[in-house]
Length: 181
Image (tube, rainbow, N blue to C red):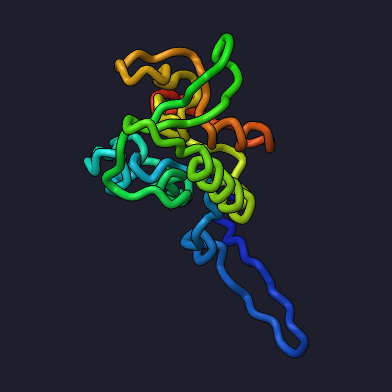
């Protein structure tokens, strides 16, 4: 009996009312969930080596109700593409960061901090509560980073941007953890 009823919604304004069938409302765009995403994962040429390596799972997120806000903290911090590879120089057990150096021995900590701040500003402006960032990156790593020796050895650790976002209550996942969204 109820399946044959046609539902309507009445909108009132100052001087008139309109009757809109519910079927018209189903075509309205639903709000999407904002996600901060590493720009390299959406296929932007921002990697240190200039390569474009998009992640296929990231490309599917908009169709699953997510709005992507891409940023490369390293580029946002003023570093060029391409650029010398950079790694976090750690002290003690690797849990604290003292600096970021590139393979030429230059201290690029200021650029990494500036880029992390830009990522936080974007995330805050877009009401982001979750970020998907590139694992292993000295900016974006959420579980592993390179050990600072430029020997391709990964160690447990978090990148500069990840640390800042998490300190402000933003959940950070790697591209390998899309199933946790």
